[in-house]
Image (cartoon, rainbow over all chains, first blue to last red; front, side):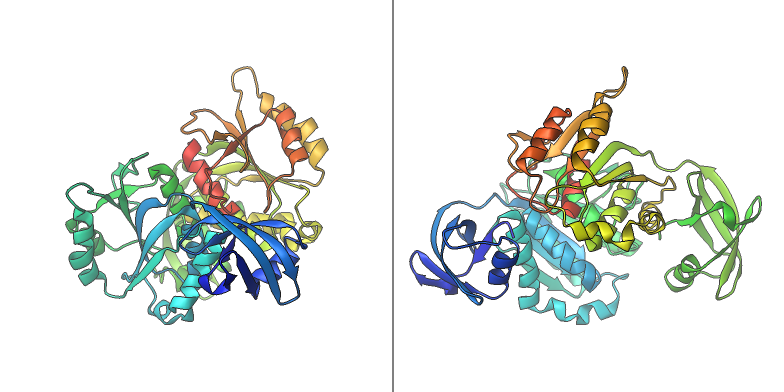
Length: 240
Length: 240
């Protein structure tokens, strides 16, 4: 936790918070903080600043906070990713949030195991918990939005095909990572992007066709096949 | 497993192998392979090719193999990384191997918990197991070398300082990732590199000084602090 994320509910006065639970545990155990210490804090979907510890007990910490600067800029990337297995999903969400991606679609695909869709991790509060860990890691406050799309074809043909068109002054580049693609992933694109990533084993051919019809270009990452958690930061770093 | 890694011991004839254990389980469960199927295979530290399944039982698979092309090129990067917690180490090793990094130093640092050095995961065979998972993921065969260095200062001042000097025709660029650094990480360096990455919480100031004296330049990755498993592919993608 490089930043302690605060919520509206934490405020007891305009410049005072009282926090509890996981954050207190972390501040005591990892930061080993004491009264008078100053920590980096940020208000969810708002500014960043400092919190001076006024009082500590095992369950609560009171801080005086000053929120005076903006969180880091988001990355203008919409990530469309085939739902990974729950264990990997947790890490992916943390990683994606830490990278500054603010719009995520978790979608179905032929090779996604049906059982993944029953994971309790897909409950909104659980998803939010993982994203918050990523924000706290990266010193960010802006919560990414996650959308679950269980039907591949209607989502790609009806919704994604509109997103790839963009608006008159902002047409994003739409890329699908695909090991068989002829073109390499472009670099430093300097525009917004939509990136589709397949499941383990990749999108099947008909899915790639559907994505292409919706405006996506397929690109490869070289000969090496990377796991999702390695591929996402790798591509983000290439594109931006 | 996008490639089934073979070992000298698997060969029963110059073009025949008999494999067992984890690989058989994976081929039956994930590939759902049957007699006559052709799989991508590679010989450890050697060539890649195809294996045609001749016989299957629950414990063994026999294949006729042809090894006729080279593995993907390695990345000319030496990674020097503060020993992460065992759970993360597993993932990092897999990720690093999949990215094509062939030389890894796991080092001590002020913020590395002492207990991490007692992890059974640090036994050579266990380290190798994780690296092999990364090779199989990325369709590579060349096993990375790992060196454990429990004494920070002698390692950096005596060994690393020689590595950063390089040879007359190949002087690597030596970088230490450090959130407080003034310079951003360079892009597409087109030369070999040595990259030092700190533990959670980063290298302490005296460690950064020691690295600088050994020839390292500190670089930042922007305002966001990324976890090791996200930062490594992010930097590799920037550099190469």
